[in-house]
Length: 302
Image (tube, rainbow, N blue to C red; front, side):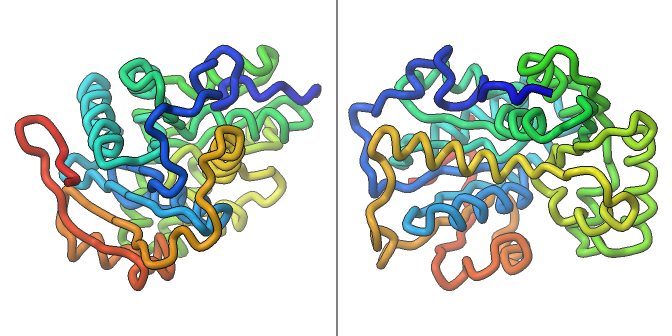
């Protein structure tokens, strides 16, 4: 297989606005990240691992979790509202750390904020997988909503039309992970069932198409260790870093010193805080954790 170009990335020539520096941009401003729940914290962790000088403002929209079973227009509305709130808060970039939001809302949010940097996780994950596969057969493990959207198949086929892609909905994974049972026999049984159609086509690459799924990677490898498992968060963080560098918006050394991450939820702050030690280790001492609410159809972060 020939490695495809990074079509769909923030630096895609089809998106010239992605290479411009917004007029009011500030290098010490935070990066906004959101998800319907806590899974997107795995993306925030990848960003902080790669860019330790940056600050994160994270929104977990737990009042509306899960997004996967909701009407797609409703998901688009939530994603647009959260993105707008993050930009009002002064974020220099917004990362949709949510696969279904990336699938249905990325284009509309970019259209609303044409001068701003908005990234999803699907195009970066597809790009990494298309570069990784040797036999042209890729499996996607995702939520039912993401599978229904067909976003990964479209993204992969736009990079390499000859790819064979099988997308599998995995409804049991998120409840098991949130209950702390990702290493249980139930998780192993679910992994065996979900991998079966991907094993059948002899895929050599599997995309973890939900931000929770890195937590079941050990279970997946117990069942089937031969494919390369792709975590889209890695490529997303890399593309974000490259873009911020290209427009001189990387935070300078020690910019985060004395400034704290802001981790918020539209749900129960105590329950959200409980998850932080698993999903974003070490964050609590350097973060303010608080609840936020939707008022008159808008999310308030001020």
